[in-house]
Length: 160
Image (cartoon, rainbow, N blue to C red; front, side, top):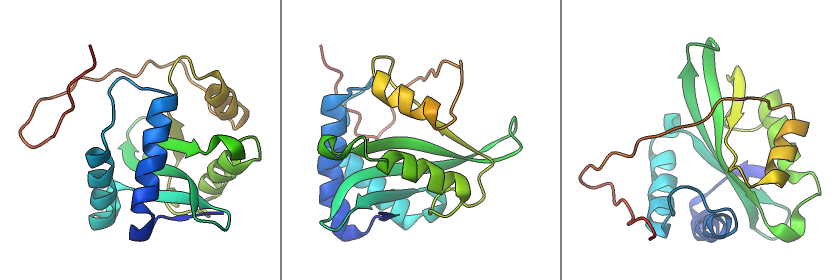
């Protein structure tokens, strides 16, 4: 089922991430080089987080990026499910729910010491929002961010 991503999975994870961004476009487009850089960073510095893949026997058919951070408010480490994607043909079979429950139970890599899980969902993605609510997520916070232009970030040009 869900396992830690290996270097041999990288190009498949890139393809899945591009599919996610085509299907549920976020605020910024995610180019393939950002995804590869993320996978390298997670592998090189495991404390930054981990990538996991859904493998039901034929290779990666889903992925998640799990990024920890410390929350003063919650009094411990939080596992942010930064991205979660399952191929459309495999949705509705409990794969995403299994990931969430495995993280909550501490049986999957990425949330062993977590006091909470967090996830963001785009406003128009009702299916994902319903999944997260059924899995026990709740919240009313509005996520905001400010992009910083720094040398070497490779920030993509926003669409016009």
